Image (cartoon, rainbow, N blue to C red; front, side, top):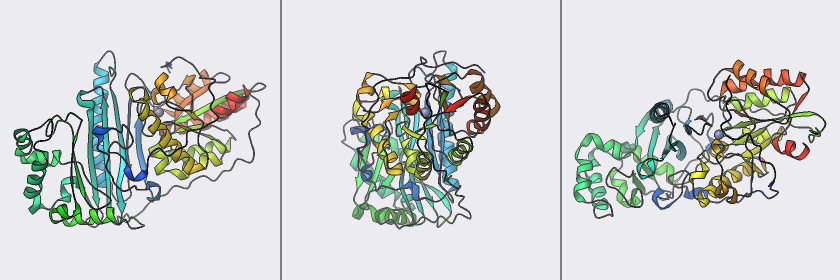
Length: 480
Ligand code: ZN
């Protein structure tokens, strides 16, 4: 297997920070439309109610990403038991956008040409028989910042997926659209003709009105992507209706979604016939690791982009069987969904590092956005494990002085890239590590891929027999 180091083989030593960033950074109740990706005036900070996804039984976050700076992408969407049609709709949306992006990389000799695709998710409501999710697509490097949002709804009572427009009753759509037009006309960057034209084609309307969400007080916010009804100078248009205004226009499902957002019940029941909840490994490290990497041969295995179900649990079992320690660079939105797995990682003596909230190229963000990405994730890790991280790995290994000075976390890159995301073949991945690894290597892998996890027993067996010890990144730094 061809292993090409995408970045200088450099384990960034030094600047070890003893002070971890652990402030929460933002209140959960004021999540922005960009799910923490790029907060700013254009994203329309939405006072939606915070949802704790770790309470959703059987939830699985479907992740895909490359760590390749020539075609950088990271996508995620939730798969909620009992809401298969909604997951299918999100899957289709994500896969179409990703396929377009990848073919663009393939067609260009210079790869993505600075472009980057990021699709993150945010729960709007998960209560009673209603689930609402917003997917935020950011395609950096495209006109207008390439920010698009769409909300997906699941009606558990009817057992069906619903679009945002289904929140409005059929008989009220004309009145609803008329009210929206009135609100939009006169806004900077658009005019009456532009707005009329956008809504003239009725088949267009479901696509334009694809981001609606209730606020904690029962109001409704309708968000328009940049080019849908005008070229908003600040980015996007948001129209907000009060509860009193919007309620008469709502469908029966819309009223239930409104009520479950305003007054969430303690449970979610979509009538799923089975909610598989894979067991979380309970291995507990008996004591501190006393491996001296000056005396013995050490390797630091690192696993990025998780935690993921069921892959991370399986990996933890393999590591425990071989008494191996590793470092997990976790993505905040996955920590929120699978806090129990992050807790299991820490309990088993592994190191938990920060890999940002939703995997953007941090070098393309403002210092405030970098800090937000990292602080929000550190807070989620601390909430799950009781300990804030001290290290972070920048997505795509992309780092510059702005990123460094925006955090007190110590950056960690890698010295051996397995390219496991590119070659979904366990034997090949195992071979790449076994043949290429050298003393004190920091090995880059991803525990969102079943094939990467499947390669681990062979790697641990063979390299342990050759006298290698598997330690965490911070342990390696402290003792090599
Ligand atoms: Zn990553």
